[in-house]
Image 1 (cartoon, helix red, strand yellow):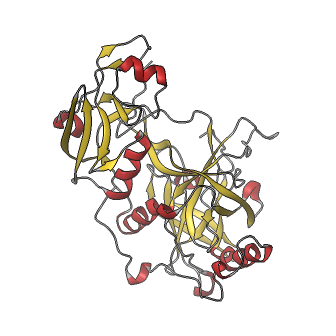
Image 2 (cartoon, rainbow, N blue to C red):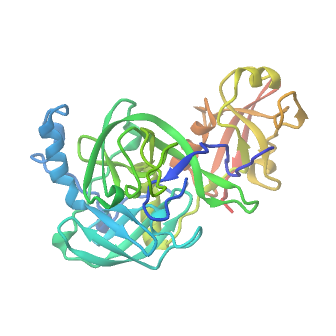
Image 3 (tube, one colour):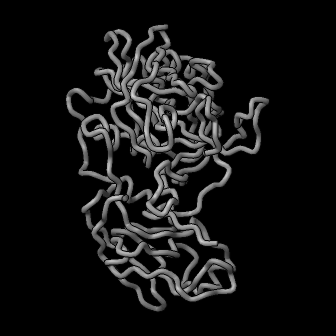
Amino acid sequence: MKKYRWIVPVLTLALTALACRGAAVGTPQAPTLQPSAAETIPTLAPSQNVQNANPASQDALVTLFENVSPGTVAIFTDSGQGSGFVYDAQGHIITNFHVVAKDQKTAYPTVEVHFTSGFMAEGKVVGVDLDSDVAVVKVDAPASELKPLPLGDSSALKVGQTVVAIGNPFGLQSTMTVGIISALGRILDSEHASPEGSPFTAGDIIQTDAAINPGNSGGPLFNLQGEVVGINRAIRTYSQNDSGEPVNSGIGFAVSINIVKRVAPILISDGKYDYPYLGISSSSSLTLSAVKELGLPQFTGAYVVGVAAGGPADKAGIKAGNKPTKIQGLSSGGDLIVAIDGVEVRTFDDLLAYLLNNKGPGDTVTLTVLRGSEKLDIPIILGKRP
Protein backbone atom coordinates (compact mmCIF):
# COMPACT_ATOMS: atom_id res chain seq x y z
CA MET A 1 0.00 0.00 0.00
CA LYS A 2 1.36 3.43 -0.89
CA LYS A 3 2.05 5.91 1.90
CA TYR A 4 2.50 9.49 0.82
CA ARG A 5 3.68 12.26 3.14
CA TRP A 6 3.38 15.44 1.27
CA ILE A 7 5.95 18.18 1.31
CA VAL A 8 8.41 16.29 0.82
CA PRO A 9 7.02 13.30 2.69
CA VAL A 10 8.43 9.83 3.14
CA LEU A 11 8.38 6.65 5.11
CA THR A 12 10.15 6.98 8.44
CA LEU A 13 11.00 4.79 11.43
CA ALA A 14 7.94 2.99 12.66
CA LEU A 15 8.93 2.39 16.26
CA THR A 16 9.83 5.87 17.40
CA ALA A 17 8.61 7.10 20.76
CA LEU A 18 8.38 10.68 21.93
CA ALA A 19 10.66 11.20 24.90
CA CYS A 20 8.25 13.13 27.09
CA ARG A 21 6.78 11.57 30.21
CA GLY A 22 3.13 11.12 31.03
CA ALA A 23 1.16 10.40 27.91
CA ALA A 24 4.16 8.49 26.61
CA VAL A 25 3.41 7.40 23.09
CA GLY A 26 5.42 5.83 20.40
CA THR A 27 6.39 8.54 18.47
CA PRO A 28 11.76 26.77 5.94
CA GLN A 29 11.89 29.04 5.61
CA ALA A 30 11.72 32.75 5.93
CA PRO A 31 14.53 35.16 5.10
CA THR A 32 17.68 34.68 7.14
CA LEU A 33 17.05 36.05 10.62
CA GLN A 34 19.52 37.95 12.75
CA PRO A 35 18.80 37.98 16.49
CA SER A 36 17.66 41.32 17.83
CA ALA A 37 19.22 42.83 20.91
CA ALA A 38 16.55 41.07 22.93
CA GLU A 39 17.43 37.76 21.30
CA THR A 40 21.22 37.96 21.36
CA ILE A 41 22.70 34.51 21.68
CA PRO A 42 24.90 34.32 24.80
CA THR A 43 28.42 32.96 24.85
CA LEU A 44 30.39 31.47 27.68
CA ALA A 45 33.20 33.48 29.23
CA PRO A 46 36.68 32.17 28.36
CA SER A 47 37.11 30.87 31.90
CA GLN A 48 33.88 28.89 31.50
CA ASN A 49 34.49 27.54 28.03
CA VAL A 50 34.83 23.77 28.19
CA GLN A 51 36.92 23.90 25.03
CA ASN A 52 39.78 25.15 27.23
CA ALA A 53 39.66 21.90 29.22
CA ASN A 54 40.56 18.41 28.08
CA PRO A 55 37.33 17.16 26.46
CA ALA A 56 38.12 13.60 27.51
CA SER A 57 38.54 14.50 31.17
CA GLN A 58 35.97 14.25 33.91
CA ASP A 59 36.73 17.84 34.85
CA ALA A 60 35.52 19.02 31.44
CA LEU A 61 32.16 17.34 31.89
CA VAL A 62 31.83 18.60 35.46
CA THR A 63 32.57 22.14 34.27
CA LEU A 64 30.06 21.83 31.45
CA PHE A 65 27.30 20.70 33.80
CA GLU A 66 28.01 23.46 36.30
CA ASN A 67 27.95 26.09 33.56
CA VAL A 68 24.81 25.04 31.71
CA SER A 69 22.50 23.22 34.12
CA PRO A 70 21.14 26.50 35.59
CA GLY A 71 19.76 27.22 32.12
CA THR A 72 17.78 23.97 31.95
CA VAL A 73 14.22 23.58 33.28
CA ALA A 74 11.54 20.99 33.95
CA ILE A 75 8.09 21.51 32.43
CA PHE A 76 4.85 20.09 33.85
CA THR A 77 1.35 19.87 32.37
CA ASP A 78 -1.86 18.14 33.45
CA SER A 79 -0.89 15.11 31.39
CA GLY A 80 2.85 14.76 31.78
CA GLN A 81 6.25 16.34 32.04
CA GLY A 82 9.30 17.17 29.98
CA SER A 83 12.34 19.40 29.79
CA GLY A 84 13.35 22.72 28.29
CA PHE A 85 16.00 25.43 28.38
CA VAL A 86 16.24 29.21 28.71
CA TYR A 87 16.47 30.84 25.27
CA ASP A 88 16.85 34.51 26.19
CA ALA A 89 16.87 37.05 29.02
CA GLN A 90 13.23 37.97 28.31
CA GLY A 91 12.10 34.64 29.78
CA HIS A 92 11.49 32.59 26.65
CA ILE A 93 11.88 28.84 27.17
CA ILE A 94 12.39 26.34 24.33
CA THR A 95 10.85 22.87 24.52
CA ASN A 96 9.06 20.33 22.31
CA PHE A 97 5.51 20.86 21.12
CA HIS A 98 4.55 17.39 22.31
CA VAL A 99 5.69 18.31 25.85
CA VAL A 100 3.07 21.09 26.07
CA ALA A 101 0.50 19.50 23.75
CA LYS A 102 -3.08 19.35 24.97
CA ASP A 103 -4.04 17.26 21.95
CA GLN A 104 -2.61 16.51 18.52
CA LYS A 105 -3.03 20.09 17.26
CA THR A 106 -3.19 22.44 20.24
CA ALA A 107 -1.12 23.23 23.31
CA TYR A 108 -2.06 23.96 26.90
CA PRO A 109 -2.28 27.76 27.28
CA THR A 110 -0.14 27.64 30.43
CA VAL A 111 2.34 25.18 31.91
CA GLU A 112 4.40 24.92 35.09
CA VAL A 113 8.15 25.59 34.82
CA HIS A 114 10.66 24.51 37.48
CA PHE A 115 14.20 25.93 37.54
CA THR A 116 17.19 24.07 38.98
CA SER A 117 17.45 26.67 41.78
CA GLY A 118 14.04 25.61 43.05
CA PHE A 119 12.23 28.65 41.63
CA MET A 120 8.89 27.86 39.98
CA ALA A 121 6.73 29.89 37.61
CA GLU A 122 3.68 29.64 35.42
CA GLY A 123 4.63 29.75 31.78
CA LYS A 124 2.48 30.92 28.86
CA VAL A 125 2.80 29.00 25.58
CA VAL A 126 3.38 31.76 23.01
CA GLY A 127 4.09 29.72 19.88
CA VAL A 128 4.18 26.15 18.60
CA ASP A 129 5.56 24.48 15.50
CA LEU A 130 4.17 21.01 14.87
CA ASP A 131 6.48 20.41 11.91
CA SER A 132 9.71 20.60 13.91
CA ASP A 133 8.02 19.70 17.23
CA VAL A 134 9.19 22.96 18.83
CA ALA A 135 7.34 25.21 21.28
CA VAL A 136 8.18 28.48 23.02
CA VAL A 137 7.02 29.18 26.58
CA LYS A 138 7.25 32.64 28.22
CA VAL A 139 7.81 32.98 31.97
CA ASP A 140 8.03 36.00 34.25
CA ALA A 141 11.09 35.33 36.36
CA PRO A 142 13.80 37.37 38.09
CA ALA A 143 16.85 38.09 35.97
CA SER A 144 18.88 35.99 38.41
CA GLU A 145 16.89 32.90 37.39
CA LEU A 146 17.22 33.40 33.64
CA LYS A 147 20.45 31.84 32.40
CA PRO A 148 20.20 31.79 28.58
CA LEU A 149 22.21 28.99 27.00
CA PRO A 150 24.53 29.62 24.04
CA LEU A 151 23.40 28.08 20.74
CA GLY A 152 25.85 26.21 18.54
CA ASP A 153 25.92 25.38 14.83
CA SER A 154 24.45 21.96 14.09
CA SER A 155 25.79 22.05 10.53
CA ALA A 156 29.30 21.80 12.02
CA LEU A 157 28.56 18.54 13.85
CA LYS A 158 30.46 15.38 12.93
CA VAL A 159 29.55 11.75 13.49
CA GLY A 160 31.56 10.48 16.44
CA GLN A 161 31.57 13.84 18.23
CA THR A 162 30.82 13.69 21.97
CA VAL A 163 27.52 15.23 23.07
CA VAL A 164 25.78 15.68 26.42
CA ALA A 165 22.05 15.58 27.20
CA ILE A 166 20.58 17.27 30.28
CA GLY A 167 16.94 16.84 31.21
CA ASN A 168 14.44 15.21 33.53
CA PRO A 169 14.07 11.53 32.60
CA PHE A 170 11.33 9.85 34.65
CA GLY A 171 11.08 13.08 36.66
CA LEU A 172 14.69 12.93 37.84
CA GLN A 173 15.55 16.60 37.47
CA SER A 174 18.89 17.78 36.05
CA THR A 175 20.06 14.38 34.88
CA MET A 176 23.15 14.42 32.63
CA THR A 177 24.02 11.69 30.13
CA VAL A 178 26.89 11.46 27.65
CA GLY A 179 27.17 9.89 24.21
CA ILE A 180 28.18 10.59 20.65
CA ILE A 181 26.62 11.82 17.44
CA SER A 182 25.56 8.55 15.83
CA ALA A 183 24.27 10.01 12.56
CA LEU A 184 23.14 13.28 11.00
CA GLY A 185 20.34 14.29 8.64
CA ARG A 186 17.80 11.72 9.83
CA ILE A 187 14.06 12.16 9.28
CA LEU A 188 11.04 11.56 11.52
CA ASP A 189 7.31 11.95 11.14
CA SER A 190 6.17 15.48 11.87
CA GLU A 191 3.44 16.23 14.42
CA HIS A 192 1.72 18.04 11.50
CA ALA A 193 -0.52 16.02 9.17
CA SER A 194 -1.40 16.78 5.56
CA PRO A 195 -5.03 17.34 4.48
CA GLU A 196 -5.02 13.67 3.42
CA GLY A 197 -4.12 12.63 6.96
CA SER A 198 -0.53 11.52 6.39
CA PRO A 199 2.17 13.17 8.52
CA PHE A 200 4.59 15.61 6.95
CA THR A 201 8.27 14.91 7.45
CA ALA A 202 10.60 16.52 9.97
CA GLY A 203 14.17 16.61 8.69
CA ASP A 204 17.74 17.48 9.68
CA ILE A 205 17.38 15.28 12.77
CA ILE A 206 20.42 14.37 14.89
CA GLN A 207 20.78 10.76 16.00
CA THR A 208 22.64 10.13 19.27
CA ASP A 209 23.33 7.29 21.68
CA ALA A 210 23.29 9.61 24.71
CA ALA A 211 20.64 8.12 26.99
CA ILE A 212 17.28 9.82 26.35
CA ASN A 213 14.19 8.58 28.16
CA PRO A 214 10.63 9.76 28.95
CA GLY A 215 10.96 13.21 30.52
CA ASN A 216 14.00 14.19 28.42
CA SER A 217 11.86 15.64 25.62
CA GLY A 218 12.50 19.33 25.00
CA GLY A 219 15.80 19.31 26.87
CA PRO A 220 19.08 20.49 25.35
CA LEU A 221 21.75 18.40 23.64
CA PHE A 222 25.17 20.04 24.08
CA ASN A 223 28.54 19.87 22.42
CA LEU A 224 31.62 19.93 24.66
CA GLN A 225 31.84 23.71 24.32
CA GLY A 226 28.60 23.98 26.29
CA GLU A 227 26.59 25.07 23.24
CA VAL A 228 23.11 23.71 22.54
CA VAL A 229 23.24 21.78 19.26
CA GLY A 230 19.85 20.08 19.44
CA ILE A 231 16.58 19.57 21.32
CA ASN A 232 16.03 16.00 22.48
CA ARG A 233 12.82 14.76 20.94
CA ALA A 234 12.38 11.00 20.62
CA ILE A 235 13.86 7.53 20.96
CA ARG A 236 13.59 4.38 18.91
CA THR A 237 13.01 1.42 21.16
CA TYR A 238 11.50 -2.03 21.42
CA SER A 239 11.58 -1.93 25.23
CA GLN A 240 9.38 -0.43 27.94
CA ASN A 241 9.28 -0.28 31.71
CA ASP A 242 6.59 -1.69 34.01
CA SER A 243 4.48 1.43 33.44
CA GLY A 244 4.52 0.92 29.69
CA GLU A 245 6.83 3.87 29.06
CA PRO A 246 9.45 3.45 26.30
CA VAL A 247 13.03 3.22 27.55
CA ASN A 248 16.37 4.01 25.93
CA SER A 249 17.95 1.48 23.62
CA GLY A 250 20.81 3.63 22.37
CA ILE A 251 19.00 5.37 19.51
CA GLY A 252 17.78 8.87 20.32
CA PHE A 253 16.80 11.77 18.11
CA ALA A 254 17.13 15.53 18.53
CA VAL A 255 15.86 18.50 16.51
CA SER A 256 18.89 20.32 15.09
CA ILE A 257 19.54 23.70 16.69
CA ASN A 258 19.85 25.38 13.29
CA ILE A 259 16.19 24.58 12.68
CA VAL A 260 15.37 26.01 16.12
CA LYS A 261 17.33 29.20 15.40
CA ARG A 262 15.18 29.77 12.32
CA VAL A 263 11.88 28.85 13.95
CA ALA A 264 12.07 30.29 17.49
CA PRO A 265 12.24 34.05 16.65
CA ILE A 266 9.21 33.69 14.37
CA LEU A 267 7.28 31.74 17.02
CA ILE A 268 8.02 34.52 19.50
CA SER A 269 6.88 37.27 17.14
CA ASP A 270 4.07 35.54 15.21
CA GLY A 271 3.15 32.41 17.15
CA LYS A 272 3.61 30.12 14.15
CA TYR A 273 6.11 29.28 11.42
CA ASP A 274 5.45 28.36 7.77
CA TYR A 275 7.54 25.67 6.07
CA PRO A 276 8.39 25.35 2.37
CA TYR A 277 6.32 22.90 0.36
CA LEU A 278 7.32 20.99 -2.76
CA GLY A 279 4.37 18.62 -2.91
CA ILE A 280 6.22 15.39 -3.63
CA SER A 281 6.63 12.08 -1.87
CA SER A 282 9.74 9.97 -1.99
CA SER A 283 11.18 6.83 -0.49
CA SER A 284 13.94 7.42 2.05
CA SER A 285 15.96 4.61 0.48
CA LEU A 286 15.81 2.10 -2.34
CA THR A 287 17.19 -1.43 -2.41
CA LEU A 288 19.46 -2.63 -5.20
CA SER A 289 16.63 -4.71 -6.63
CA ALA A 290 14.34 -1.67 -6.60
CA VAL A 291 16.92 0.46 -8.42
CA LYS A 292 17.22 -2.23 -11.08
CA GLU A 293 13.46 -2.71 -11.37
CA LEU A 294 12.95 1.05 -11.78
CA GLY A 295 15.69 1.22 -14.39
CA LEU A 296 17.43 4.09 -12.63
CA PRO A 297 20.75 5.28 -14.08
CA GLN A 298 22.44 5.58 -10.65
CA PHE A 299 22.06 4.42 -7.06
CA THR A 300 21.85 7.82 -5.36
CA GLY A 301 19.16 10.50 -5.52
CA ALA A 302 15.59 11.02 -4.32
CA TYR A 303 13.16 9.03 -6.46
CA VAL A 304 9.74 10.67 -6.84
CA VAL A 305 6.97 8.21 -6.04
CA GLY A 306 4.14 10.73 -5.81
CA VAL A 307 3.27 14.32 -6.76
CA ALA A 308 0.48 16.25 -5.02
CA ALA A 309 -2.07 17.43 -7.57
CA GLY A 310 -1.89 21.19 -8.03
CA GLY A 311 1.17 21.50 -5.80
CA PRO A 312 4.40 23.37 -6.68
CA ALA A 313 6.14 20.29 -8.11
CA ASP A 314 3.07 19.37 -10.16
CA LYS A 315 2.87 22.88 -11.62
CA ALA A 316 6.57 22.76 -12.48
CA GLY A 317 6.23 19.44 -14.31
CA ILE A 318 7.94 17.04 -11.88
CA LYS A 319 6.88 13.48 -12.73
CA ALA A 320 6.09 10.61 -10.38
CA GLY A 321 6.33 6.93 -11.23
CA ASN A 322 3.24 5.67 -13.06
CA LYS A 323 4.20 2.32 -14.59
CA PRO A 324 3.63 -0.79 -12.44
CA THR A 325 6.66 -2.89 -11.56
CA LYS A 326 7.18 -6.30 -9.96
CA ILE A 327 7.58 -4.52 -6.61
CA GLN A 328 4.20 -3.87 -5.02
CA GLY A 329 3.47 -0.19 -4.50
CA LEU A 330 6.45 1.00 -6.54
CA SER A 331 5.99 2.38 -10.07
CA SER A 332 8.68 3.24 -12.60
CA GLY A 333 8.90 6.31 -14.81
CA GLY A 334 9.38 8.88 -12.03
CA ASP A 335 12.02 11.59 -11.85
CA LEU A 336 15.20 10.97 -9.88
CA ILE A 337 16.23 14.18 -8.10
CA VAL A 338 20.03 14.37 -7.98
CA ALA A 339 20.61 18.00 -6.97
CA ILE A 340 18.85 21.09 -5.60
CA ASP A 341 20.28 24.51 -6.44
CA GLY A 342 23.46 22.72 -7.51
CA VAL A 343 23.83 20.92 -4.17
CA GLU A 344 24.09 17.14 -4.54
CA VAL A 345 21.12 15.08 -3.35
CA ARG A 346 22.19 11.56 -2.44
CA THR A 347 19.03 10.74 -0.48
CA PHE A 348 15.64 12.27 0.17
CA ASP A 349 16.98 13.31 3.59
CA ASP A 350 19.52 15.59 1.87
CA LEU A 351 16.77 17.29 -0.13
CA LEU A 352 14.63 17.88 2.95
CA ALA A 353 17.51 19.19 5.08
CA TYR A 354 18.46 21.70 2.37
CA LEU A 355 14.89 22.99 2.11
CA LEU A 356 14.34 23.33 5.85
CA ASN A 357 17.64 25.08 6.51
CA ASN A 358 17.77 27.38 3.50
CA LYS A 359 14.38 28.05 1.93
CA GLY A 360 10.88 29.29 2.69
CA PRO A 361 7.50 29.69 1.01
CA GLY A 362 7.74 31.84 -2.12
CA ASP A 363 11.41 31.04 -2.75
CA THR A 364 12.49 29.45 -6.03
CA VAL A 365 14.62 26.33 -6.15
CA THR A 366 16.05 24.46 -9.11
CA LEU A 367 15.80 20.68 -9.05
CA THR A 368 18.18 18.71 -11.24
CA VAL A 369 16.44 15.49 -12.25
CA LEU A 370 17.26 12.45 -14.32
CA ARG A 371 14.30 11.49 -16.50
CA GLY A 372 15.22 8.46 -18.56
CA SER A 373 18.30 9.48 -20.52
CA GLU A 374 17.64 13.21 -20.00
CA LYS A 375 19.13 15.47 -17.36
CA LEU A 376 16.85 18.43 -16.68
CA ASP A 377 17.03 21.55 -14.50
CA ILE A 378 13.51 22.42 -13.34
CA PRO A 379 12.77 25.66 -11.42
CA ILE A 380 10.02 25.44 -8.79
CA ILE A 381 8.37 28.18 -6.72
CA LEU A 382 7.91 26.75 -3.25
CA GLY A 383 4.53 26.83 -1.57
CA LYS A 384 3.53 26.69 2.09
CA ARG A 385 2.73 23.44 3.87
CA PRO A 386 -1.07 23.16 3.95
